[in-house]
Length: 350
Ligand SMILES: Nc1ncnc2c1ncn2[C@@H]1O[C@H](COP(=O)(O)OP(=O)(O)OP(=O)(O)O)[C@@H](O)[C@H]1O
Ligand SMILES: [Mg+2]
Image (tube, rainbow, N blue to C red; front, top):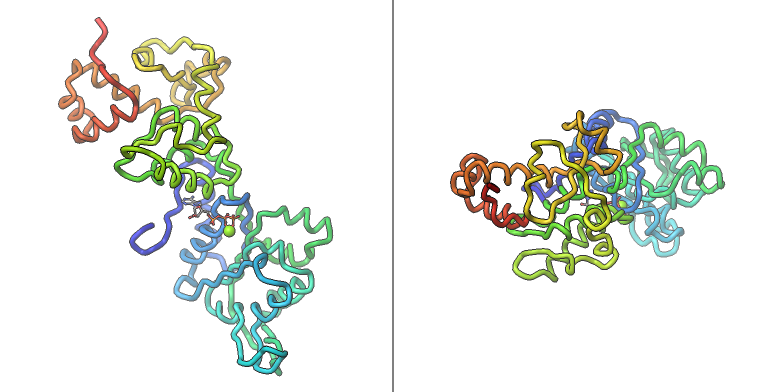
């Protein structure tokens, strides 16, 4: 959470950088937008960001979960009603569309909107006017609609559950959120951010987290980290603190991978701790082709960081104060990194 109360959108993978660029472009346009993606990928977070970065940012952001409201209440929820319009309508009620006037209406799970409501919503999009239930005449509204769905709407259209005309109307701009497992490097990054300062995590736990496929995406990862922090001792997460389905992915690389010849001079040859298999990297293009046959895993910042620390420690004959100075970090931070990476004694091998 930032000081302004908003959750920052985390992620440095290519997929997320592309998404950010599209987000900026779409935010500045007034068109209707459709956000799709698996459960927990951040659809709501992105919808809010679309609003916050738009010229309507000072107007209201009004969410409505179309899947969570009983059918018979949706119309008056969306359009509002006049007192006496039906039994139980004891007062006037302002609908969500009107509440969002001048701002953004976020229709979450739009795939769950009943067909008759889809017709009415289409009319709003075409006419920019609403007719509250029981009202004598229409009223003009100025809302931008952002919709989200975890369903494949094209499939819903084919199956006759979603109107094709509405689909094209809302899908003017579309943003597809990639599943977490396709965001290279972000699993580790998000884990670290969710853990926060003063927490460490064992290497096998981190690897298990990285190897898991996270069907529930960011939400599931966040919950797993929260849970681990409750179970952990001494602010240190171990494999035992992870949910079983995640822990099952522990160490597949170390136990099953064939050891690979490291590039000459690479610091990874010098590890005394259980040696992570060196990953092919875009940086080592020369060696990449030779290595990639044996190891088809992408590079990890983690491994590079460890290798670099080991290198510097060696250069400084194991003197941690000097190594910290060369690395440009405080000595306490170096100690934390040593512990995190399981580096124990790094004097030069003679
Ligand atoms: N890129 C991200 N950076 C930080 N937090 C994120 C990110 N993406 C999602 N989250 C967090 O993960 C949780 C789930 O996000 P959100 O509710 O936006 O997902 P969703 O796609 O709407 O999920 P669902 O389909 O289940 O409704 C929230 O706590 C959100 O803050
Ligand atoms: Mg959601």
